[in-house]
Length: 346
Image (cartoon, rainbow, N blue to C red; front, side, top):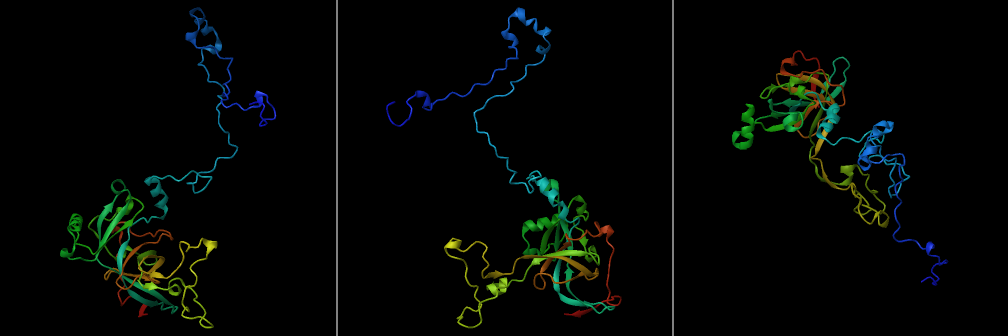
């Protein structure tokens, strides 16, 4: 109704059209029609026109009804740096990124025998150290990039009775030509050069050299359910002045409405402590005894006595000029008569 007070002007042109036609594409007046649309008499004259022999060019632009954004495109959220391309998600690219921190050769399995101390006879300095013993380390299998997707050496150590070994593992050991092993673990290597030790060969303590740095990895000593003061180092509550049975309590676990009336994820509380994988980096090899399979490293090693430990070249130090094959191994021995340092029980 035009007489309604809804519109100030009753002119139909002021009323918005519901089905507005989109704008037409501009015409390109400089282009000739297609050859088959021209008469036969005119078609023979096309070769005389200079620009007619060239293929017809596309229109300069085409109008598309859309919304033009004035904002700059955002960087890829998967890129670690906005100025660099996004990281590739293929397995080959993942191995290339990890190649810098992957050791060149395999490591060995050792048992933690305990801690002791070594005194320097010249300076008298006492150095706390841990004694690791190797027990029949043999190469069980090789993992290749073509078959398994990565490069690794599978090492077995110790001894296990046949009646306590499963039939699949018995077949696995029989294929490698080794006796049943108590522990079987893998050590990733950078490339094919790390597979220099053949399957079935034995490696001893001379695989490591005195003065090099190693990383040790093992399961820490389990301490059961512990409180917040021992597990996380909390200071506890006041020892007196009104505190009642809350001297070693952790205190508040969270706020009220301000934090959502809940316990925030990751809140440090009492719980199971220990019994988890721990890596200690950059331990220096102090002594090597090939005859007894002893490797002495400075500092502490995770786990209780007789705990199995993975020992491999340190990733945070330059790669040692150690042997890559058994032919390069130089036997080392520290007989008690020729040993300069004196070991003393801690």
